Length: 447
Image 1 (cartoon, helix red, strand yellow):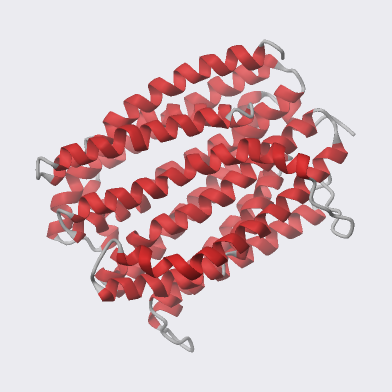
Image 2: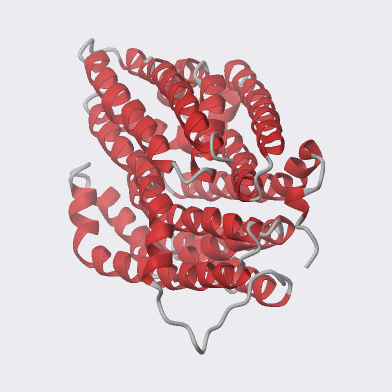
């Protein structure tokens, strides 16, 4: 078998070749989230608040799905670099099995926690009901969510990222088309309100899953799924979770932070809580493509680490860092110059604009630092040292961000709370650089 392009293609071209389809697909997903919430905002202000309260649960599912698939991605790419194709097949098959396990776990969890979770954040029964309508669908029908994330990561591991772009874009377009039809009841469709928004999301996920599965079976010639003879291999699963568990915890901490921030902001007003949810939707325009860029770095670094090509690893890190910082700097300018226009996407009233314009401008000052930290996090994952990413994320959000936000909230001025974000990013970048030095000395000494 000929050398995979990750070992021979010029690095700047390779990064764009691998990452650009992922960036496009994740940008499409970000735009779909914006469109999704924009339609919900037109349906009801309280429905938009319910979406904000539901976000930590959705994020937790995504965190577990992506974290597990990142573990598969890193292991599969490393084994591919070593030309151990039987081990590659085992990593992929066990990854599919773990995605099924994730769905079962959340299905069971959802039976008990959804209503108490929503009720802990608001006493408004209308908001709680909207939240239940939405979460009942996206949680109990999340099989496709976990599978499409895993299928896409397997495609990314072998460099076939153009298919992930097709998969994600197809699902997102389907969702955007169905949203107004199912929410408002246009034409032959019955208006389902919040349930309609959730159903549109799930249908889009199943479409994406079908496309990704087809591409892996028919187009991915470096991975073979042995369905009939499959048995869980615990040694492979152990290696997957060596990377996956820290990555899951890393991504899950955002759910904890969002829930805690909702409780802090609730002391000011539910408008502040809604704004925080809206901010996450808006910042996805910027952050999702950057995550796509850096997801592309993981298989490149892992492959060349497995192949012992140090110079290509160095060039990949430097080039990826440059691209990420440039993108975040552009995003910072957009947030600083056009905050009102961004909030207008959600029918922001005068009260939300009063709170939101300074909030977006203050938080945007942390974007460039976030670009550096995100890039280094992908390096840790590629070197199977994702525990450092977990430590950085925990320190940033639990040790710095939340305490700072709580202390600033004691001033009784909501504007001050947003300064917790740039404060936390300084800590994040500092720790990331320190851990990068440690990982480099440890890993590259034997490369």
